View (cartoon, rainbow, N blue to C red):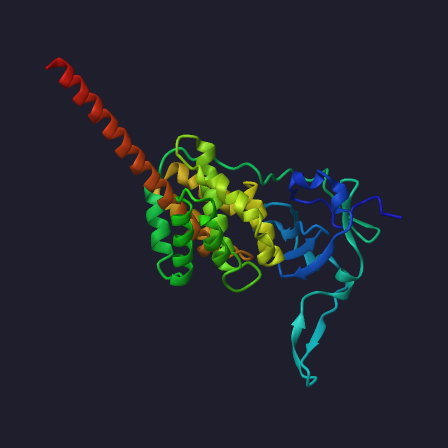
Length: 322
């Protein structure tokens, strides 16, 4: 039996896309806990995040009023032992959290048979409101360049190789550079994957703005779907979010700052992304920087082509008059 009132009270917000296709989310497994986050996965690898409301909304994210693990009265820490039997620290995953199956059903979050939250009653915190950028943000490009000066040169080299390949007409040109980036780096979300998210979301924002040429975005999205199995489960989930044009609150604010292109506002938005607790935001800015460079190169090529066309028309007109 389930309790009538949700044990965790009312959620400050939940991604409404969690209410679509609930059948696939009825059985979720707890993979990891952090101070402000719980990470759950569906059998198909879809990532569901339960986060402290102060961390802001995001794709497939449920917000709670406190640190998620604190909402359980009883928590046990498990000692991890070396082969010699000496404790090397404690994991943050408690037996109580991991013992029972999690799930989303009847528009609510359950832990075993206990109703934790009603998602239907929670404020809707959408993750698919991608802003459309129409004009080139020169100030933002300068901010990204300044804030990423100390980033690993190997990462920049790999991203540059990919951006060059995206302009090639050969269908296979993107494959090797993409394989070299995906999964590159350390941690649950490697820097290479964060950079790919930056490239994709920046390109998609310009695609939505219509005025700029970004035909490479569709090509990268198609290729990327083939290789998400080459990285961690969490990174693969973030890459799928980027392919679908879904953002966290910090990423959306960054893209909105590109629309205004004010130095002070852009700096604040970029640093907010850099400070993301569960995502390498500086690497994301590297991806955004290279995406802007691709777009600028296309702009310049279009201008040269247009100028050449006008010059030819003028020469033809003068010849006709003579």
